Length: 491
Image 1 (cartoon, rainbow, N blue to C red):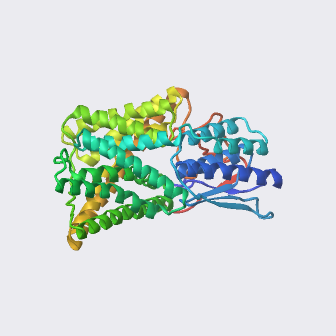
Image 2 (image 1 turned 90 degrees about the vertical axis):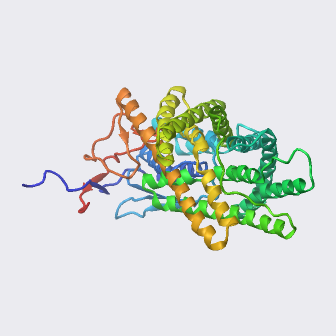
Image 3 (image 1 turned 135 degrees about the vertical axis):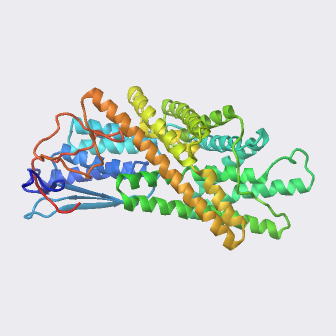
């Protein structure tokens, strides 16, 4: 009746020194910290950052390392035992952008350093070189990609060519203004207010022109101008990133990302409200409708989805091959979404299923084509992001009376977050299943997020790299000979 093992997983604790001198340990901790902060700043998830730091420290024989990642900082602590002072370093993440070219170069360099460790000083120079490398595109190319994304969104929700051109011009202006405000150090909340005010001002000018009898604008819908511009602003928000961190167990970072989405969405609502109030006082009221519908032509939908995915990949500084694959994956995902909705599957479930197809397929193709799976999948699911639902919720809050607007708009916004969670879950499952297939082919094994579990035998070390469930970096599930295991009670 006696148990053969502990009731729960083993917990690894420090038992003996690693044999690493203090100077080397300091250099390795600094090296790992630089890589972790750079990855978090360029769009990596908290799980990937944790795995990267543990990989680097383990490659230089630092075993008892603890990593804490939240949305604004990274902390690394090296426990050297009861008779030596620990080394603990924390660095603040001052900005966060989506830069998948730099992210992929960092990952490639980290994998190379893990396989072939060099002197920490030389490794630091190499990492700094990757961080300081120029972008693959000029700024006007990224601006044009953002404007193209907005024009494709306008076409997707039924706008004609004239409306799409107007949306392209408006989005170009929004992108340049946001870039200028960013260089001035204006907070993102106020930048969102200005960005959302621009398409609303354009819609007001359309109303004024229509009232003056300007030819050619009779069929132009001011609501579509506002909707397309707002969806472009929402495309950069980390709804799916928040859900991914929550699913990976990094709840503090997930809550921080979610709160950022709420704050930036509030900025959009304020920008729209201010312009609407000014237009009302000037005698040019705009009745923006919170409801938008997709165009009935499936071919147009698929083409728009492909353009949106490829344009977002370029906005995130993905290379040409990754942007092309993102466009193809976005089109395939949209077809899968349409098929599931036609057979009666709910929109949230259909989004999760289409994201699963994208995650599974892209993971297999990205490994064969030597591309970043994260860059491709992120761009491919952008057409399915709940931007229209968020716009609908914001519009209900802004345009309807105070009590009715909040009661109608809040459930819509909650449903949009649920759809983002479904997309994140679908991508994660698809990537995981593809990873199982690849691991079976190569004789490797998958690991869960770094730090989530520990091996049964802490003294055994894997002979081959371990594939992470994201498919980007091998994460460590063994921590070497410098620890032993203790048991813990409970679930």
